[in-house]
Image (cartoon, rainbow, N blue to C red; front, side, top):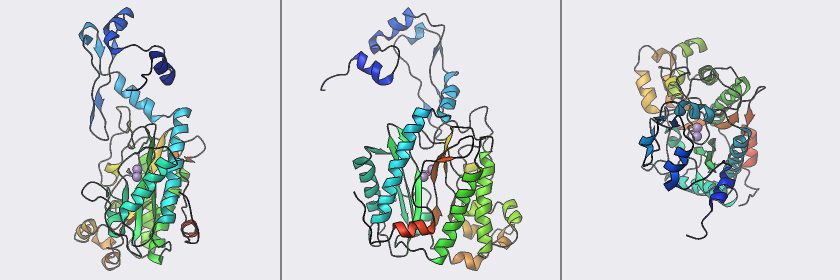
Length: 381
Ligand code: GLY
Ligand code: MN
Ligand code: MN
């Protein structure tokens, strides 16, 4: 077992007032005559998983309350301290560097899992991050339209073909704090016109939200804003018909982005506190109901901003048959995108009084990406 840390070592490491052995629990607590012991129990509104209440032999000798603590702890986790922000900033810096490394090294003919391997190697070897915050999503071509691609039954195992668009969603975990970054780009380092148009639509949505996200702003309004920017571009491209207002009214945005705009992030990648009792309830309409929070923004919240645009044949085929919306869709043009996959652009940001602090630092514009991917350059490791 090697040298065991002492009680003093633990006190120093965790900066707590007292440390005792577990078999002294009852005796130590009794000596303090507490009026109540607060234990943590509750359902995580994101994962629906319960926090399993702590207990110990002899707890029946005390009055325990398992209701008070959960919403308070969850709210504490929503608003980050400066020290927490330091760790989150580091996790996103290393993850950004790792994405840049993948971007330089990827090429047609490689397999998706090799992008995962490059990312994990970088965050561990350079950043000391042994773990990633979630299963790496390394989707190429059509797989870009599969939301949580990379899971056990689709383990990033496709060969990447020349011309494929990539949706690489990966983030490290450092001392338990997560990052969650998505980069989308063509594997060959040169955008086609189609790819550039869809990519720019999503980037414009990402930047519009980033500009508007201030304390007091509703996250639901930000989701709508992102939809509006993407729909405006799809209309300009002739993929849609009608007006932007009509498209918004019929919630056409949810056909192209069936997930929420972003989520709270911290110790969990989809962090707690999204729907606490004092918060607005979960919306009910498609797309919006996938939001992991409907809260108003507050200073020092950390969230992802991750608009996307995907061409999902199953969703679009159904929409073509729906008489209430089919007149808004240019079927022939949309079918030309059935092999496109998708684009997602995901940044980790801190909400500040005067605007967001973007913790993500990767090439984002078409020009920046193409320049970064020029094959004459090398990067290590
Ligand atoms: N990587 C999971 C998500 O973006 O929410
Ligand atoms: Mn995310
Ligand atoms: Mn992600």
